[in-house]
Image (cartoon, rainbow, N blue to C red):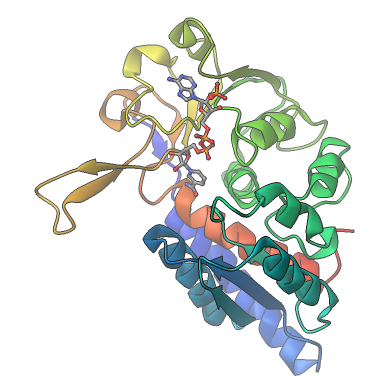
Length: 293
Ligand code: NAP
């Protein structure tokens, strides 16, 4: 039986810690951290994510601004919005919710964001600084996972960590962070992706498995070794008639099979997801305190 890594409870602890810091800032007459979110279009999932982020800000006492634009906004107009946010001294950090409509270049927008306000950690400057182990904004999901490993005091030095997935926002930064010469880190890292052969043979050798591929139930019981630490990043909607919504959220790990073998495991929901949101708040606090540069 594995120890369940409770992301929901850990995220609440982080929010409480941040709320306390905000009270202290207020008491001492300092500026209250201010996060802005830019939302383009009417995508339901994006709206839900952004609303969640704004609500989180309210909960901890941050200022927040939501800037909503029609899906028809031009690239030039959106770049102008980004420039204004870069120059607005009120805003400590901001995010541009992805995905953007097809006529807008995500790369151009991301690169226009002032790296010092890039609390999503997507700007190449922040990615580069992370690789060099310099202070940087680390994208929220990997940052949240690092917080979980740290707060559960999970040993990582000398361990074999297998990351499944190599996306810009999860797999690749995760692999870099786990191999850095620090804690959590100092792992020997293997990255698996859609072209990797015999993933099960590789993951079975891992002390730590981070599954971030977006295929519900991919990691089966026979693909992990006894006592492994299993971090499940995946979130996939699967039809479930027993739910009011008609669907259930499933991770990349077959929890029923893997949990009895694992040493530690994150559930879905209630594992990495809440930590991603908490990590954005941590980044915003760092931005306000100018601690990431
Ligand atoms: P992504 O951009 O689609 O990347 C998926 C990665 O997995 C790619 O590198 C892909 O390989 C690899 N992959 C796909 N199928 C595979 C297979 N059968 N075997 C091995 N590797 C495979 O996805 P993402 O943005 O990283 O997200 C991954 C999952 O995490 C999704 O379910 C997403 O919803 C979830 N997510 C959760 C959170 C959270 O807060 N909990 C945050 C972000 C994402 P190639 O590079 O070869 O294509």
